[in-house]
Length: 575
Image 1 (cartoon, one colour):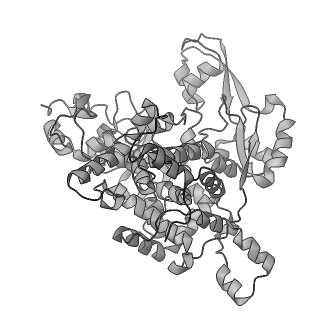
Image 2: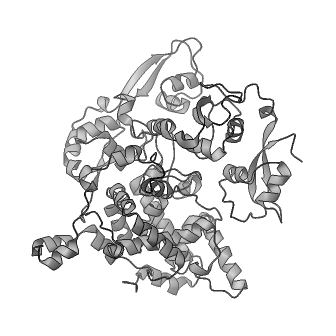
C-alpha cells in the first residue's frame, strides 16, 4: 500500500537534523533512554493467542468477563449492505464516520512489505478471527482516545494498534520483564517519562499518562531514525542502542540498513511484522474473512475532576456504573481508592459523566474515603499493623504524619480502609493477584503449596527447592523475576517436590532447615570482554536462563563489556 499522507513533522526532522542525528533539544537523559540496549520484554499477546487456540483458559478472568455483552455480537457486513441497497444515505454516512474509517485514513506505513514474517502473522490472524474480536472488545474503551492522540501528533495511526502487540489491550498486563500496562513500560523508562509508581498507583497503567508517554517516546525514536517508523518500533521494543548496533554492523558488511535487513533479537524481528499484519487486517478485514465489531467514532470516556481522594466503589455508585468499569478505565489504581496526592481525576463513561460531576460536587468531604481509628497495643509495630489492615508502614506514616517508625502504646492511629468488602474491588491489585494464584499453574502437574516469604528469600532459592523455574514461580503469583520479595508475602507454588521440599504446605518458607539456602549469596558481576551468558553460567555453576531471569535479559541478546549483572551463587560451587 502506498503511503496515504506525509507527516510534516517527519519531513521537518529530516531537513533540519539529517539521518540518525539527535535533535539539539534532546537532553542527556533523553539520549540515555534512546540509546539503551535494554529490550522491553512485553506481556504481548501470546496468552490471548493461546486462549483463542484453545490451549489454555486461565487468562480470560475478570477482564474478558467485564466486556459489554452487546459487543460480543459481530458487526453486519457494511460493504455488502451498501452494495445491495439496504443502507440509507443517513446510515451510510454514519458508517463512513466509524472509528475504523478514521483509523484507516491515518495509516502511513508501507503495508506491502513482502517479508514472510508478515505473511505468517496474517495467516494466523485469518485462522483465528476470535482473536481480533476479543482485542477489539478489550480495546473499545481506549481506541478512540489513542487514535485521536496519534492524529493530533501527526503520527501514523498504525501506532494506535501497538497495544494489541504489547498487551492485547489488557490494561493490567504485566510481563516477566517487569513491563506493565497497555504500552508495556518497564519501571525505569516509565519513570523517565513521568510515569510514577507507588503503593497506591502505577502510572504505567494510566490510560492518559501512558499513552502520552508512549507516543512521545515513539516520536522521539522516529526522529532519531530519520523518520522511519519501522526502526522506531524496533527501538521501542529492543532499545535504540540495539538498533544502532545492528545498523552499524550492516554498514560494515555493506548490507542494507532498513528494518527488514537487520539482525535483531528474535522478539524484535517479529514485532514490526505483527503490527503490519494487524494494520492490513484492519485496513481490509473482508480480504481475510474477518468482520470487525462496529465502533462509533465517539469518545468512550470523559475526564472528571474529583477534588480529592475517593473510594472507587463509592465513585462507581455516584456515577451509576459497575466498579469493574471504574477500574478498567482507571487501571493505574492498585488499591480500593485513588491516590491521596492526586491527580484527582477519574475517567468515566461519557453517558455517566454529568451525573458523576453533579454527585461529586455535592459530596460531603468526610465520606470520600473510610477511616478506622486504631489504638496501639503492647507488642505492636507499624509493619504488623500495616499487614493486619492490608496497607504499608509508609502509608501509615504518611497519613498520621509520623517522622519515624516509633509508636507508643495507647497512641491513636488513623488507618485508611475500604468502604465495601474486598470482593467488590476484584480488579484491585490484591484481588487480581489472588485470582491469579487461585487459577494459574493448575495445569503444571505440581502440587499446590503456600510459601511465606522470609528475609533473604530469592526466587531462585524457592524455585530450586520446589523443582520449578524462577519464571513459573513469578508468573503464578502475578510477579516478574526481578520483583523484590517482601518478607511476609504469601506465594503459591505448584511444587514438583512437595513431599521432599523443606517447606510445609501451608504458609511456611522453604529456606528453614535448608543447608543449601544459607550458602547462596547475591553477588554483582561486571561483564568482561568475551563474556557470554554461557561462560558466566559455567563459571558460577548456575543456569543461563536463571541469569537472564534475574537480570531481565533475553538469552538471544549479546552482553556488553562493562554491563552489570546480579547473580545468586552457591558459594560452594563458585570460583
